[in-house]
Amino acid sequence: MKEFIALGIVLIGGIFMAFQYYLHIPLMKDLYNTFLDWGIVISVFALFIGIKSLLQRQIREIKEKKEHLIFPLTTIISFGVVIILWLIWGAKKDSPPVNFIYTTFQVPLQATIFSLLAFYITSASYRAFRAKNFSATILLITASIVIIGRIPLGDYLAKITIINVGKHSFSLLNFPQWVQWILNVPNVGVKRAFKFGITIGIILTSFKIIFGVEKNWLK
Amino acid sequence: MKLPKQIVYTLLLISLIIPLVLGISMEIKPTLPVINFYNALNKLHSGNFVIVSLSYDPSTKAELTPMLKTLTYHLLKRGIIPVFMNLKNIAIGDLGYKVVKTIGEDLNKKENKDFYYLGYAPGDNMAVQKMGEDFFKVYDHNFHGDLLDKYEIHDKIKVLKDFKYLIDISDGNSTIDYLTYVNTKYKVPMIAGVTAVMASEYYPYIQSKQLLGLLGGLRGAAEYETLLDINGDARKGMSAQTFAHILILFLIILGNIEFFYFRKKRKNGNAD
Image (cartoon, rainbow over all chains, first blue to last red; front, side, top):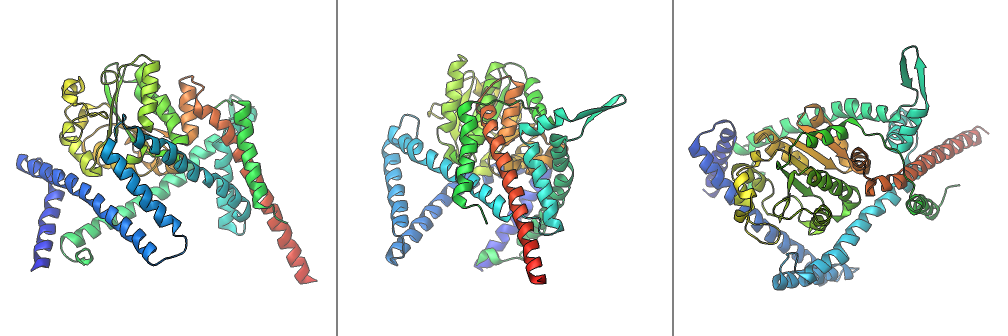
């Protein structure tokens, strides 16, 4: 019975949401607005589920006395400190403790971790970027063109290699233009194919869920 | 013999630091998506409202904050009223506010008159759609908690369609969400500034004219600064990026020379 009710709600809700996009009927619009309000409220509650599963996992790691206990402990302590400060001072611009934590810890930590990628990419490009076969060679040549074409050196090379043939002039090493061609032609072609395939997949999966063929979400 | 990791890391560090310390500046030629971004904003008139979504966090601030700075300068200088919000990423905190406020003060612009900063609102895509139906149901107050009904925005804006553009400064998939709900459903024209790795994702939308202009990564920000004749963070950063790219290219070539040399040596060894 429970399953029947859940599937019924999904069937009615799914069909309604699909039709309201195309039919501009006032009653449908009011219902749609109500659903949006519910959705916003429910999304806030989803945060609590996230907090619960984060804490559960960290506490389990401490209980099981796994290696590197410092990590779950740091997570729980940081979480607790920020929540307490937030509850006392709020998160607005005039709450110095929360802003202090944000600007002193979160901003530099996140920026540093992301910056480290540059070092890994440089090392990986030296160690792994090899012209081992035809496909790898194509990838290597394309990447090299993009690497040069996206920096001012590419503009400079394009400028100094301009030659005049009759009334026309063109550049022998026009890397920026080659980059634009790569982005506009092969890139867009492949991206469109992917997006089209994914969208068809989403539509089919939605139909399967709405009409109760796919029931894994009930488990 | 391979170059040790430490040497590669040191070379990269040197190639990044030297151009920044010496302040080397390079000429950058703007590309079409950036020119279109710039032209789209130049078509607007003083007093027009645009909504700017700050959908990034501190990890990508090196690429996206220069865009935000130049965009804010461009909008405020032209008298366009930007409304900044972050529906998609709470982690930007007051990072965006500091940038906007500083530029506003430099140009003698007043908050809640010449620009608005609304901060974060929960709900993600639900909130985006709700704004399409009734803007103030999602944002009834600004970043400081002041109710918006006492400001001009309350008279001029009712729904998302009342904004001339939605501009997304993003390091993730938020631009696609906005294209789906804001551009396609509520017909609000869009332009965006995204990280370099995400830029290729949006080229199909430029061709379909759903996205009228695009700033891609630090290079895109530097091109935008060039169009506005500003020597900002992005143009300075491009010199460091240039040296790093040259180093990466050199290492790729070196790695391949090694690869072919040892492969040939191995083959000769087997033949012997």
